[in-house]
Image (cartoon, rainbow, N blue to C red; front, top):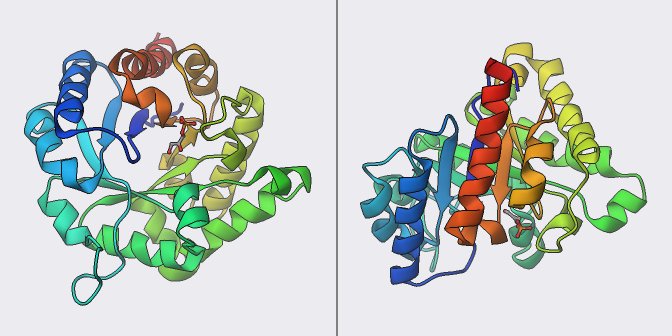
Length: 259
Ligand code: 13P
């Protein structure tokens, strides 16, 4: 895993109550203490303050699942990057396939959001990934290249200096079908090569997470791959025991590479 600290991020999606997210966040803060991995939780915006009250004094980081590309103004229902930053967010998930598919976000819009998030001092977690049809048509490389190219066109290679990329094959999200460690590694290597070909330093430092049906029992084999630097976890992030087992699987890869 080179010198990249693993990042395990929980995308809680549209789930939880004020009470349940506080319980989940406190179990994660307690269990993650001392692990040699960075841990991130991403609740819905209205739960940020409650979750910040729990994780604010712990090593667990806070993130949002989306943000507006606008700073302020007549954009009913939106939340800006500065507002999220004020609520303690350090990361913002952008371009998740659910936002691309259900809310029609384009790669160009995602790119503008990346710039807004960085301008507010936070780190985008840029999601990329292909659908099953695209995989079957052998378009994985071109689809992911196009998703990255839109961001490169907006911000140049320097934008990847303060960025996490999450490879989430759409067919693996919430389906129980995980990419095999080799399939995932092949795409992670492509992403790193593309960024490294533009700037070797940025490419070697870029953390690339895998997401899509990561569970406690498949995490270690995925995280053992050379270019997989952690995970973006959906369903299994809603249960503290499962999520912490995934964090420990990432920790064990660090301990192995250190020994
Ligand atoms: P699952 O872990 O539920 O497949 O979700 C993955 C995901 O979409 C994380 O962003």
